[in-house]
Length: 257
Ligand SMILES: NC(=O)c1ccc[n+]([C@@H]2O[C@H](COP(=O)([O-])OP(=O)(O)OC[C@H]3O[C@@H](n4cnc5c(N)ncnc54)[C@H](OP(=O)(O)O)[C@@H]3O)[C@@H](O)[C@H]2O)c1
Image 1 (tube, rainbow, N blue to C red):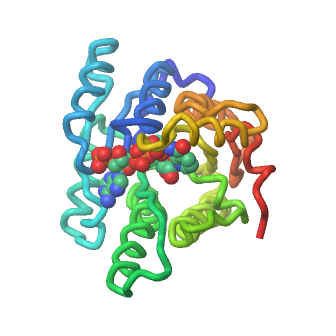
Image 2 (image 1 turned 30 degrees about the vertical axis):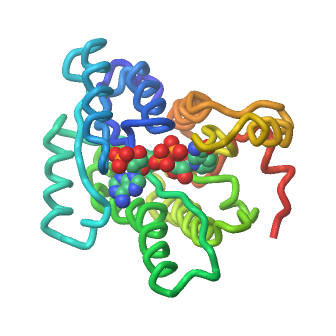
């Protein structure tokens, strides 16, 4: 991927319209890559970002809506595939960034936990797997790459209270390792694990201070910290099946299983 600026590569970034996804889109775009911004419900944010990027470089950003709940619907999934491939006529890179994230209360009713199970596994494991599979032929043709945005809690560091999320992200991490082996040498597959890169909006100053203090580097990360490592991974041609933590050292302070 070293001469990327001159060969007009195309990347699909899932959940790319906001937060970490938007930072990744901007970083890839600044690197000369054309971006396909995937959104679920965030049509307006995707449109705003795409307008912003197209103002910098004409016809360099497009968007695609796809609710992962439709992944079981072959007709809709094939339509998604065809639309993605038609946007720029090729695809070289998939960044699996989209995710849902919330706690699992073991005291909840079966119906609630089952709904959460289906949603958390859908966004964090099933969609990344089937979206990768959907574009395999195209990525093989282009010596493409897959980068998965994981979580430090998927590295044998269970997130207490978030069991289903932890399980789903751990499955996603296993996908990175399995696909890296199965798709080598034509496609490289790597993962990046954020620690705390954006705090939930309902965190007050005291909670922020406690969390900041728990990070060895004494700061909350930023979406750009993740985006920078995506660029690094894309340009590391001898690297596959690896997961890099970008967490200010926080993972080292967590108890392993
Ligand atoms: N934020 C952190 O500090 C942190 C920490 C550890 C790991 N991570 C990981 O880093 C990645 C990005 O984090 P983030 O906080 O920026 O993500 P986020 O805002 O929670 O989610 C990213 C996007 O995922 C999309 N999405 C969710 N459910 C979907 C569905 N059913 N169908 C289609 N799209 C769906 C949403 O797109 P729409 O808005 O368009 O619906 C959403 O904007 C995630 O994989 C997350 O697990 C983040």
